[in-house]
Image (cartoon, rainbow, N blue to C red; front, side, top):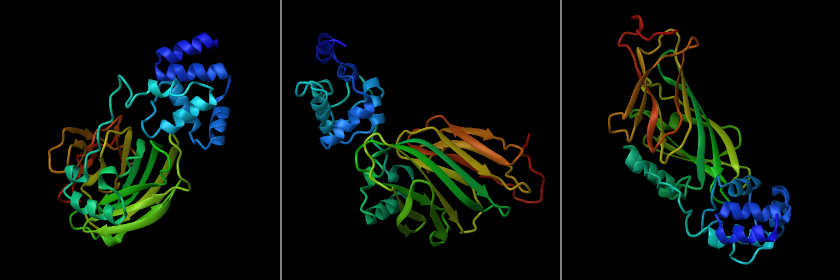
Length: 317
C-alpha cells in the first residue's frame, strides 16, 4: 500500500476505506492495533475495528470520537483526518429509530416506568446501550393449562463502552400474584436488584464486567410465575426493531389448545397486525419464528377448549 493511495483514501473517503487503507499501510493486524490503542488508554473491541474497516458499522459520534482520534495517533495519520470522514452521523445510512416507551406498548407502562425509576434507570433509555441481535424463549405450559417455566436467551452487542447490566421486565396476567414470580439468572449474568408492583417485576441481570463498544454478550435467565392462572399465550415486548426472535411453547400432551396463533401487535390494546395459525410438532411444541420484529408485541395466543375433556381440533402431524 503506497503513501499516495493512503493520501487519496483520506482525501476521498469513505471512512471504512480510509481506515482499511491506513491499517494496511501500517501493516498491523487488528489484534496488534487494538493492543496499541490500549497502551494509550483507548478501549475498542477487535470486532468493532473489523466492522468499521469493512463498512458494516459506523462509529457512533460523539461516543466513538476518542477511539477515532486514538486510531489517528496509532496509525500515524494527520489529526482529524479520520474524524472529518465521520461527520455528526453516518452519511447515506438510515438512522436508528428511537425506542418506543413502555406506555406506548402496554397498559402497565406507567407501573413499569415507576419500577425502572426505583432501579435508577431512565425509562426512555432502558437498555439503550445494547443492540438486541437475537432472542430465543421457550415456555412450558403445565397439564392444568398454567404457565410454567420461561427460559430466555439473548444475544446483544454493546453500542457504547461500560455497559454492565441488562434490565428485564415481566408483566403477568391481570390477576397474577407478582410476589410468586421467581427469577433465576443463567449464563453470562447474575441477578441484581428486583422491584415489584402490581402485575410487574423489573430486575437487573449483571454482567461480570463492563463491556467495550462492539462486545457481544450472551445471557440467559429463567422465570416461573406460580400464580396458577390459565395461560392465554405468551408475548414479548420489543421497544425497538430487533431480530430474529424464536418463541417456542411446550404444550400439555393430554390437553393441547384448540388453536395456536402467531401474532404481532403494535400495543396490547390494538388488534393484531399479523395473525397466522400454528401447528405443534409430535413433541407437542409449537414454534413462532420472526426473522425480524419492529417495536410492539410479538408472541403466540392460545385458545383453549371450554371442556378439557373434549377432543382437540388442533392437528398434530
